[in-house]
Length: 139
Image (cartoon, rainbow, N blue to C red; front, side, top):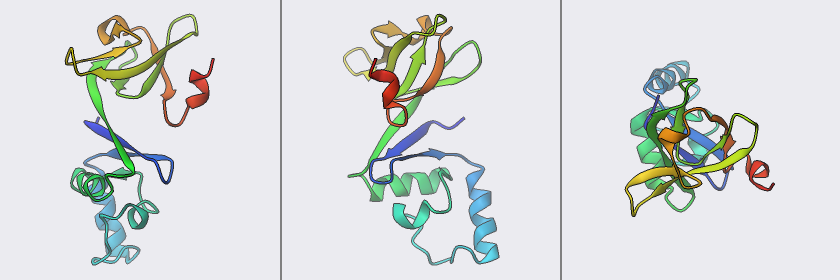
């Protein structure tokens, strides 16, 4: 799993950083679908091809589009299903109730979900994120 993902506020879609994406970029350049001189750092030009970016391109897209990109970090904590918790994830308890959103607490230097330590949330499921699934938080 990658260390980061990001929400593009303009295009309303999540992008991910992944090593395997580099291979895909080279394939598209080789097929002529992406020109070698295309501006792959500009979000509008890059996104038609990928929502998973090689780490180098991910960083460049984030740097060049700071006004519209929200970066979220994976926490390093996994639930019992081995799904890795990420900042912005919405968690649901065993009874089907929404617990809350994973957020970073800078005063404690730790991630929490509705005041709970993530280590206390290991039995919870990830049911979405706060950008793609806002409706889960309305109740």
